[in-house]
Image (tube, rainbow, N blue to C red; front, side):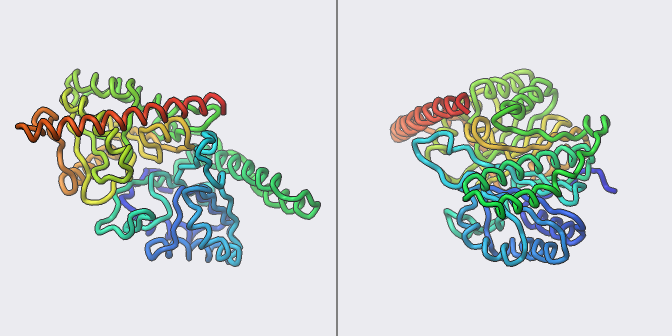
Length: 403
């Protein structure tokens, strides 16, 4: 058994390795995704899931009811014919109901309770964007494959809890009939029989699963960021699709830079949501003035969520923004292995070299009379975006407390 974690870059590597493992599955495949698409790049995975179900493997898929609604509309009849079970997490979003903003943002796959995939990669092709159409270059994203028994055991308990809760919720919304009750119990019984595997202290030290939820683990991932940054001694490299950090996280990055640590951030360079882009611009300006290197990824969309602090690494679904830190269900892996950290740094360095541009200091970006006008307009747009962001954070915290 290979218990060393494997770093997978983009859907091309991720889907190919995932298909191999699904072909070998004998008992159960459990998959969670936020976005869902039936396209040329995901078709091998979809076909592998159908073949697994045909040979008796139980295939269970959980899709966010908002992010995956388009894909569900296309695939639900196909899955029903193939014998694949699925659940939707909180279908629909209501604008004036902050509790409905909470989403299942995790991307994970658990195969036979022995192989776990976690990262930022959805079940959607590298060149497919549901809002912007075909992409000329692949989306930059990361995932990790591990066979660590304690981590797989923890993921199994998470899968059991999630499936049981969604099954119960769906049943409550249905007419109460004896036949439905018996079908509901049959769907739960196989998972209730499974035992959570024992943990090994050595594996727990080197690789851990961190969750962000609305009950026991509201701040687990955010605390891990802070703890790692406080221990930084040589280098911090971060790739973050949505980078809207709290004041305390910005202070932690600045403190690391002031102590002599080289801090580099790879952030989204393409405008996906204008308010997030301008708010991000306002927040990174002060970091640049503190000596932090900021690079915008412009080759395609950046979707990776990774932080490397010396030999400490976390990769997962959690961005550094209000949605991830206050509202969404997230999952990250923490890995403390020098070899893995070195490999991740190489991948991030390559992404910076081949697809990113470094942002200059705001003082050097605007020169002359025309530059002064551009800077004033830029600062006005950033201020408006920050006001909107702070209002959203205030509403999110209220929903956080209520829930």
